Image 1: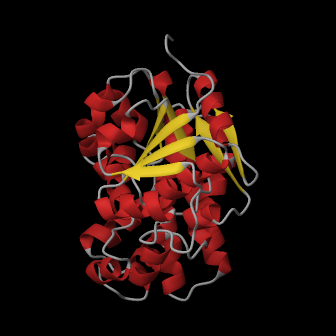
Image 2 (image 1 turned 180 degrees about the vertical axis):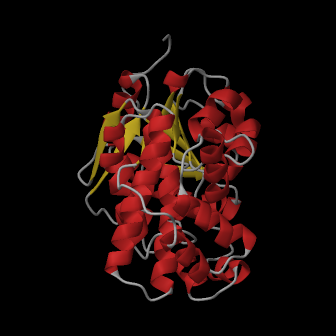
Length: 341
């Protein structure tokens, strides 16, 4: 494709939350020049002048190669790749505002993990629709991506999925460093579904922890949750092997087991008896991605005739006021079946 740069040196990260900031650090530590866009001017100034983002990653020093602005046009000027680091349910609105500023043929990199409410579209589908670009121009990042651990330089891996393998490899070269090991994949559907579904399963694991349940319960939820996402992926044409990899079981284990996971901690508060509002306030006013995704994924699975009982139970708890204990009892009381049916 004309203008495609196989060696990506200049990248823009749109969004200055914890994962966007951590991924910007990954790129900077890989020797790339990074411009971040932050909605709040004071956050952009702190990143630019103080090499830190205390609002989201306190105590983390950012590389000198990272600068920041609150002007999206300035941030996007000359970018060879654009990282979209905003929540899944706000991606459409943000990208609509930015679409006219995107440099022609720039690689669009999606960090968001979710299924859009209403349209039931994956994030790459939202991007291709709004930005009016072909599928091969979008690279999806998935895997066990706990932002704080990555920002601290702890050894981590990720999957970069794109139907155009050359673009995936270009982003791989731009993000590979001494602590971050990216792998490429062409199964965009599987990688995106794994990233979206694991947030819902992490809610269930958090609720189980809040109820005082132990390791057997967690292992059961993780394993049966993996079966749910694999059934959905199979129906949509994903490669089953994807769910055995970093974007499947890898991301699932990390998100379901770590106290750094917003979805797990949100679910734990609900399991302890807090209301949705109380859990949201305790989480800094933010709703975990899985709270919204459980509804869209449930609707998607129902439209396809795919059985996803844990996802349906999380929807009932989060949006219908069902007590987590009752939801658990309903899951255990389901009809008996073969493990692989």
